Image (cartoon, rainbow, N blue to C red):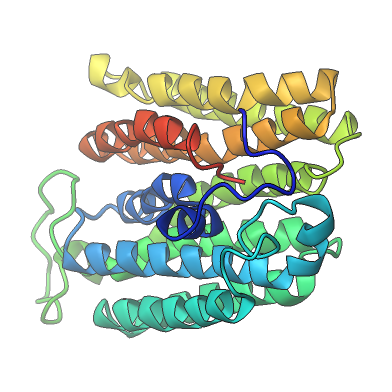
Length: 331
């Protein structure tokens, strides 16, 4: 993707803030929460909406804080970025990170105490990554944890309500107010944890791989890392497809195959090119492709959980993300 020449600002004001916050990557965020709600077996509700808002705020806080923390490094490697080019003051970026974090926690609190607890852990992970862990070997693991927590946020914020499953058998005793009979059964919490753990792990593994590649995007030079990430994305896509085929029961059961294929194509093609020619531009494209691939991966996870409407809605975000990425880089 073409971009501004090094050292030359590409506009100010709204354009500068759009670059700082990497708005084209925002489309990859709501799917975490929605996939979490689907994994928990819940239909999205008001709590889910609060969680989506919290997730977007915390993601953007991380983007602003990232550039504030890397302003000296960007002055050498990316002088066209908003801070080193002088289009946004460092204090403004740091202030935006603080305000967005506070807004995210406030929104999460509206979804309940469990959601606020998860959001606080997510915010702590984001700040720890940007300020301390980004240039350490723990960086990919920290980013992976952040994406997994984002999915868990959706599961915890989507409160008790009707499940997507079949009609629940009558319970032998009355459930607590606001709790369904399904939730009152022994072991329900353990089953929910297991259902959420698998998709959270899938997002974490993908994020780990993309973050590992992103550590080389400024200078390139790595063939091994893109190849490893390509293997990871291929394995995740295959695992999703195989799980779908084993559970196939009519045409609707095959719906997850489409987002699984789109996921592998979106992430795998630029990773393959970066492995063949590990230049900075191709490595950056691989990172951008990995970010956009979050959307079909989230859709596949939602479809596997039975939330076909959520999956189709998420797939609709993919072309929007691709279009905006041509104007504002996601990396």
